Length: 309
Image (cartoon, rainbow, N blue to C red):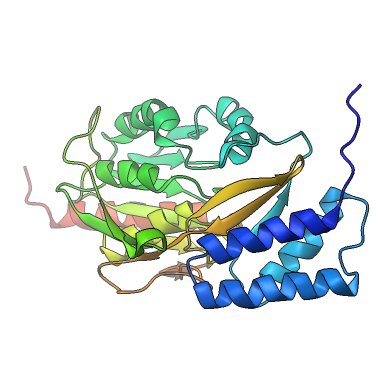
């Protein structure tokens, strides 16, 4: 039997504050938050016995200044790996294995409209390229496509670019990441070639969103919207545009700290705090029916405009 690790809040707070000041994309806010954490520790606010409760309290304080939802102290029921980022990867591996690699649904509806659900995450590309490529290739022959991101909680920006590559005809600048380390920036582009067949950049495309759609799933939604490539149907998304890294600060606690911020080349901004606003607002539960109706109407309109054979 494994002996539970004693929870000592002070070392957790000290290490979390250090990670903030060294890595957070906004240094001035990092200093404010580090001071807040130490002040709350001195006040006894973190005098708790359960790691899950400490995670809840610290996360609320971390998000109290600028509402950054990627800034968290995450609780892991199983002991977390000590290597940076490993705790999150280990925790999502089971989700990958039981979700067909992140594409749990590929379906052809009447009228040539395909639905591809991407959930619960856009998993790391070295895991997900094969299943996502297979799903998108299978849907490539459809006349219209609905991408369902209502249950997608985020993931890998490289996987965003991979998915976009199936939905565009030409290599396209999608996003620019500005990183704190070295004050450098890094552009994200769609790929010049994809394994399999593209759906392409001209047929009708719809993306379903919800209040749960987050992070990299929001980037996929936002990129396609700003390019004028897709109609977004559903609810405003959660509003997290800052990619983050995770560090284990206790055997059951991981501090996730955003190290960059996304800037879209079309809008010159991002969806942080505001979420992606749908083009066709409706309840998430109704969005599939709404998008399907829009797709059928669009295909009928295009058919009526086509010259007779």
